[in-house]
Amino acid sequence: RASPGRERTPDPNLPHIGPRFPPKG
Image 1 (cartoon, helix red, strand yellow):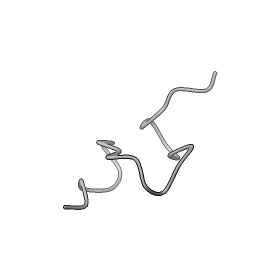
Image 2: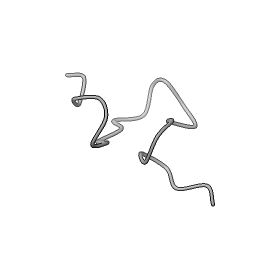
Image 3: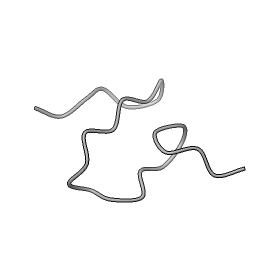
Image 4: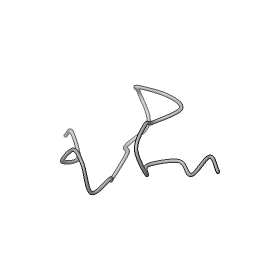
């Protein structure tokens, strides 16, 4: 169960859009 942007982002540089943390930009 490794969904990119679900709970943790695989890369801190990738635009992760998760329900826990807002998108950084």
